[in-house]
Image (cartoon, rainbow, N blue to C red):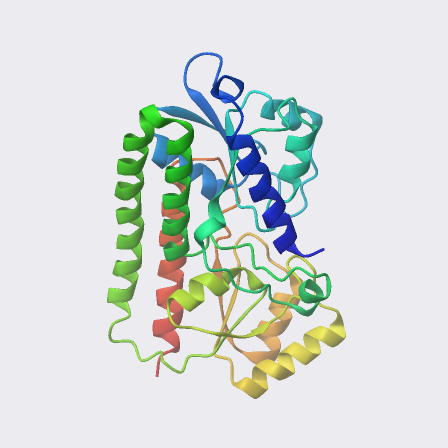
Length: 306
């Protein structure tokens, strides 16, 4: 089923929930509790709300969101929330089922990607399954800044007393994120990388690479998390050779035998990006991991430059 209808359904649910009387959504006492499903959104929301609200991960650290199935204890956690911030375009589809099964089926939802220009999903299997949207929009500074702005605006509407603080915090956080991108671009100012051809193990990094003027020439996995068959791998290797791909980007913390096969058969340089989905939830996690990703990208582009 296409992700786009899911996106509209989640947005419709959020709009309907916004019309609920305030007494139905307010926290019974103390700070508001804002739920999140993914590590980047924990960082976004924590930096936006500061001490004015509590950020609650719905999924415990250590679970792979791509393979996650809702657990009863996680669904119960939603009953204590005042709102939920979602990726909403395919990376956390399980959240809709969790909310529907919780004690708060009308929980207000913030769709973080409402204002983000979306890219199509990569891989033949993804397209065949009707998944036409790439959900990894958070792996980009520009798109993260857009999402931070959307989240701050929508949380401010739900919590007018703290709206001004949310806006100020979001602007300060966005300035730090933009500085990461500016620093990376400054390092690349003299690198001759205009003709650099890159491939990726899966389609998660299109947003980040496009932000730096790079188009992905080939994607190894037919869909995210699905290893290629021997025939598909051989075809992809042939494509890389034909296109003279110079750099391959893989995912940190997920070594695979076929990645080594590609390296051995082609001799193409291999670099690993963080997917920002591991470790403890922390306000500074996104900045730390994206700084590492940008350092990796700069290294790859400079080493491959003529």
